[in-house]
Length: 178
Image (cartoon, rainbow, N blue to C red; front, side, top):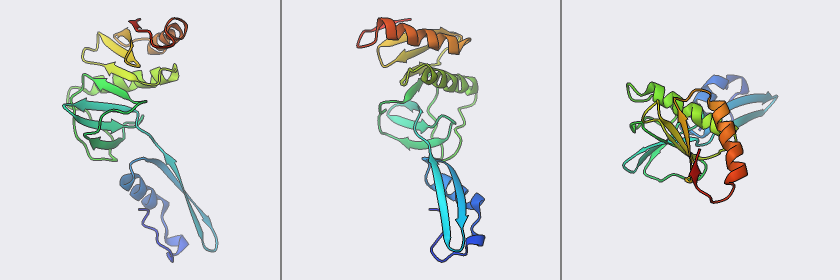
């Protein structure tokens, strides 16, 4: 996948080209670095990425990493640890490209990404983000606690408060809303 084969001249190997090939051919690679060990060693170090967001519609799913890179388009249902996004139109895009939302949904997409990142920072590692109405945003943690976020202002504070409240009042299987 790197385009490098045994016997290639070390000085002919271009890091930019290797990085481009690997991150395109293998979407779960986030970054690549190369080091040369003369006379005959080339070390390729990869930094992985992982699924973070999932946009779905009628049994079609596009999975994205935290930076918005499309990791897969599939008919496979959600796995644990992903943030499912509701309120966005499913749009199949080429794997390994940066996701571009449907025209008019750019602000909803950016809000969904912000919510997922803030939720994860606060220790709320999975759930469903609903950005159907940007004035009435909700985040449902673990399928059991619905958190009303309003217009999305002060997300960090709201997620931190929700995390502390869940830890104190509903740490196990309790359901409710905040």
